[in-house]
Length: 257
Image (cartoon, rainbow, N blue to C red; front, side, top):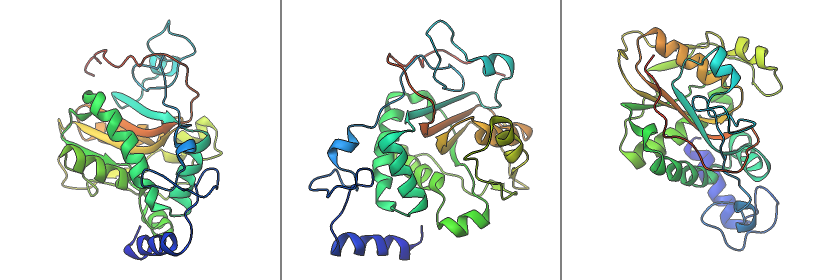
């Protein structure tokens, strides 16, 4: 978001009472973002059993990989989302992306950095790569939510962030409401590594806000594989899958492709 949008939100918060972006109640105390403490406590982390590779919630703890990853693996090595995309988190993300409530950014960053501190394998990378937005969508929204997350993660863990290496060359339709196959077709060939960029053997951490079918990050990973990229990890704030209780099994090594 541009400086004008950030300034506008700050002035609104100064002259008008701040309300929770989820329940709408007046926020008498918060941790620095427009969510009441009651709603903040309702944000649910994803729990195992999770697919070792794509991070989707499994129906039981018997299998280590989901059927999709066993039959038709994704082009990334491992993906993880931190919390469940429902309820309070869904409302907060919608306010952030579509209403420009940029003051929610620290809330999302707190969630993601806490997870990354615990699961360090996601930081064994050379640089952080936000999922690119097409210039038309960037103009409409005013900011790239994946870049905001990437920038903060990069600063926190002293990792370089690359915003220019890969571009989105097709202005794809929003994925919301599309069936699984339609999502794959929608983002097929949507990304392109910029000419002259050398990524051979590089280890990449792709950052996105929400994972659903993983079609977008898979399409981006396919393009990275095409130019010889090394290991590709994906971290996202949320996943649309429902979670089950239990501990997260993240220690298993992934065989090199």
